[in-house]
Image (cartoon, rainbow over all chains, first blue to last red):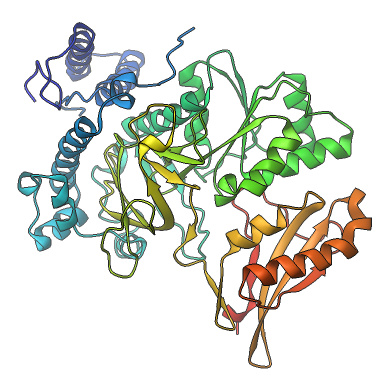
Length: 66
Length: 443
């Protein structure tokens, strides 16, 4: 899948693009080494959710948490 | 309030060819994950000459080797505690659970990552939303939690949906009934057996659950949830609709659910699982409507990839069009029809516990039952032990004759012994009921 298409090769909707952007930003945040425990744990939890939403919609997210 | 009848409209409403294309993409992703991270699967896939890149169509699925429970147990015995199926180190896990060991074998130890836990809840959410659970519902879990996975995922699914979620933990049965009434619970989750036990407890306490706020009972854990006679008893006792769900502890979640249109079976959650129905002897696929063994591949499990797992569950798959709900998901007609290995051979006749239950549950006077098989003078004997509801003692003489007749007629004239068990003498179950006592295995 290119970043602009889902696992069926279809163009992403605006909602799907926004979701992927959130997921990517969460991945970037999680990769930082200076997060306090409350933010690190919350980011990991949010990443689990954003991955699941992307998976539900057939979006093939990749990266350290995927 | 979100009025959409589907939890995931993009997928549940898609056409079959699109679903199959998605399944192929997800299968390849699952294979990449398994061969990249799990030594167990890497070894097996390499021996079979299969890689993610070599899988071009769904038909290539059949080149992937089966995974059996015996292999899983063996790998955990060789590499305690979790075996080399694990795709990530233990540190990535946030949850631990055990299989129930229903089949008398050693339980399997299972680890779930954060993502697994989300996925487990997600699959339950598909099913609960499909049966009509909404944020306005109050959902009661008659479940003791602990290390058996049971309804854990369903609990989190209800929180995710936004329903008020009540965990009853180690609360005694009578107190559970009172809390269901006091809190205005709309949805009760339990095993089929325990849903009946709760109803019995309400009757003993003189409490009216039939006219309570409960309008949905969602069951899991036993095939009885799809036995029409058992289902009808639960529906009559609660004055509510009953939906069945089924999954596997190995996967941690449900793979199928009954939607609110209730087509006489359960929809397979096909964007999260690839389910095959095979002849258990030959391993060849069977056609729609033919009985075979479920073999499941998971698209969502991270810590422990599951590829072509032999479930030993017997099912009959029918097309999605059998249901009026419009979902793309195919259906297992009649739910889980039994287990490949739960058939009892009695003097040359095949006896399935599910068939006995359907006969027993046609009689509302029966509270609990047990099937005892023994070998006496080199002859197998099967005995149905029956406990009546306290108010139904007068019915015994008629019931005994009727049960003799019905059991014999349903089993090629095989003679069953039918005994009345003293009140309160048979075991009650909150988790999976174990009603077959095969004493031949001890001798």
